[in-house]
Image (tube, rainbow, N blue to C red; front, side, top):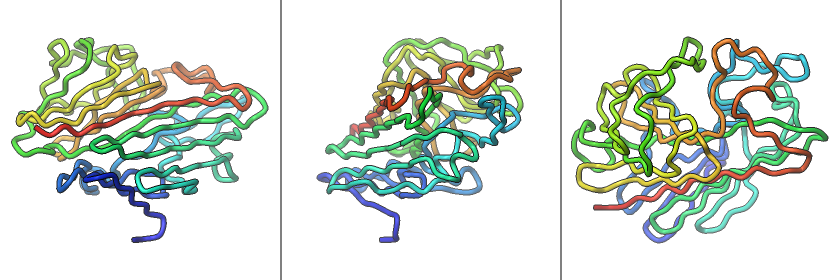
Length: 291
């Protein structure tokens, strides 16, 4: 196995992870691979971590104490080298600490850790953010896993998403530059069920800000499903690209800058704030249920 790659197993379940970005590369239950295989023609990632921001920042920068700092989409965690802080047969923990490179973009001392744990047919992903700075630290984090679509045969337009609660039949319109506008657009959701098709993602991601649901299911026509439960993530999003054989089931604590926003990072909507040595905890549990 290549350096920087870690494999964990539990029964028939197997996951492959990379210290580069602490990224999940593969999750298999028996012979069934659930994560999509990267294709640069569509998307060259599998499951990037989002930190210390989620989404796009206006003009590609954040502002802290009157100074501007360059910040790419979804932050820098996905491009960072994490330390492997501990592992066992079914679990591995990665840690990213502030360093010279991170402070160029985010002038805070922090510790960002992610723990992956296999429990039979479930994959638990836990994020911990600790503020190591003397004052308050704003942050956002999120998960962006890309699953195979289809993952259990049949045509893609026979798949659906079922939310735990009825969600609003409209989502924000994403403006140029990835910014969130106040305008809303309708989506074809009926109560808790969203039928999936090529047209679902023709415009942009479906972003459910302050979603009612804390769980959802990605369901194949056979009845097999990938079920997700979220803790500490108020926002959910679904994203793909036309013709691409993947669907991202995303969970966020924050989101992209609103149109016209020019304030400090700490003033941005939905940012979390940690006092000195305070820790934030966020978790998702994905479970594969065979028909």
